[in-house]
Structures are given as structure tokens and as C-alpha cells.
Image (cartoon, rainbow, N blue to C red; front, side, top):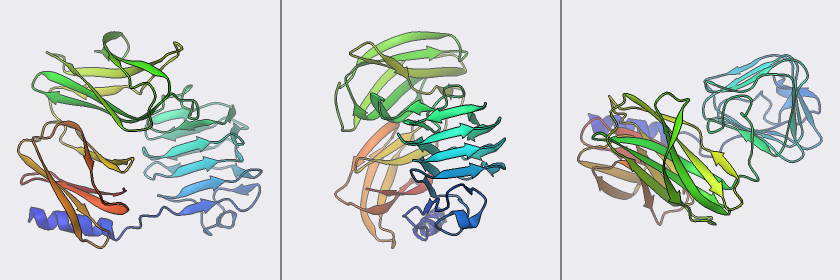
Length: 322
């Protein structure tokens, strides 16, 4: 029955399209809710890549309530809001390029997931972005062309009474080291250790630190990046409840590799299957007692489904592109 349920789940994923629809503004000063403003003949919806071209203005004069939907918004022109609230799902990303801007003519708000990214009048100019990794207002939008580090993973895993802190980067520019910081209340922080960075890299780098003998029920962590010139930046804050584990698994594609993140140790063998969009099994790898971040390589290139399962309650799958 469990294998049947996983097969049904994979079949549902197979039927989904791998190519995200691109919905481009085609009417200057067009409005979000007007179907005629958009290249797809409809207003933006879940899964779209929304593009506001250079020298064009998108007008938003009513609330856009898409809290359960995820989209990518690329702004090369002007995003102009009049007393409007924008609510998007947790996996939404908003990118403002060098010719782009977002202007709140009157009070408004942008929310991604439960995080408020902007909540006032004013203008945000490129090059900046906001997604689930950026902080709350007033630092909801951050530069993305000058960031020294591109984080692609940051996880906390409970192992016995220890906490395994792991993070991964896909890009490092003149980075000297990482500092791991811990808090028990989310406000007061202490530095635990320093880990030397690769320095300059465009490949996937994995780092880890084991914080031993944690007895608090809730603990917070963040990573501080320090450049060779002394500049620094922080990751978002991660929280872990140590009294109960989280058996969820995150699946992502990073530089033609599969990044798995197990939030608690899974006892026994876990099978990872690589499946084509038409349901053909390409490859299967087995991991024993997986925990934390695991990177898998495959010779396959293109769209595929990664299915992760064991003989118990773990059954999940996600479509990615390798």
C-alpha cells in the first residue's frame, strides 16, 4: 500500500509541467488584475514567472492576495503600488534588477509567507531581492549582485542531545570565514566557533559544526559570513525544537547535483530514486541512516523526479532539473 501511495504521488508529479509559465507585462501602465495586461491573457497565478520589462510600468491599485501561491517576480521596469497589500507564498522570490524599482505611492505592504518584507511608503531600487531567506522589514530586500556568498542550504539536525549545524554554498567571493552563533531566546547571541571558508568558489561547498550537549527545548542558530575586507552578513535565523524531531526531507537541485536535507536521523536504509517525467526509473541509490545534508551525483541530465522512501513512514518526491 505504501509503495502504491508513493507511485500515485509520483504520477501526479509526472503530469505537472516542468517549464514554469512566463507571464510578461505587455501593456504599459497596465494593472495586475487585468487579463489584457499580460502575455498569457490572464493575471499572474501560482507557478508563474512574472516579468515587468524595462521602460514599462505595472500599476497595482488593489490588494493581491496570493498567500498560498508561489511565483517569481522579475522587475526590470517599474512596479507602482497605490495603497495595496501584496501577499505571496513562502517560496516566492521578488527580484529587482538594475533598471527596476518598486514604488509605494501610498502606504502598502509586501509579505512573503509570514514575513513582512516592506511596510511603508517609499521606493526600492535594484539590484535587490526578497524571498524566504531575507529578513523582515526594514531589511526585507537585500542586494543580490554583491552578496559574497550564495547559500543553498542551512539546516539544523538533532542527533541524541547534540545539534548538527550544516550549511552549503554555491558561490563564495573573497570570503574568509564563517562564524556559528547560537541563542536560546532569539535575541541574545553568543559565538560558538569559526569555520574557514573556501574563499573563492563557484562550486558546491558543504560545512558543518556539532553543537554538543544541548538541553534547552528551543535553540536558535545563525551563520555570520566575514569577508577578507572585514565586511560581514548574516543568514536568516533557524530555530530547532529539541524535544521532538522533524522527519521531513527537503529535496533541491544545485549545480547538477541533488541536495537532500534530513532534519532528523532516519533509521535504516532510505532509497533515492531518479525517475524520468514519463515514469522510467533511471537510477536508485540507497543511504543508510541518513542525517543532515547529503549531496548525490548522477550522470543523468534534464528534468526528473527524485523519490525518497523507506519501509516505514517516509515517502516523498519532488520534480527537479539536473
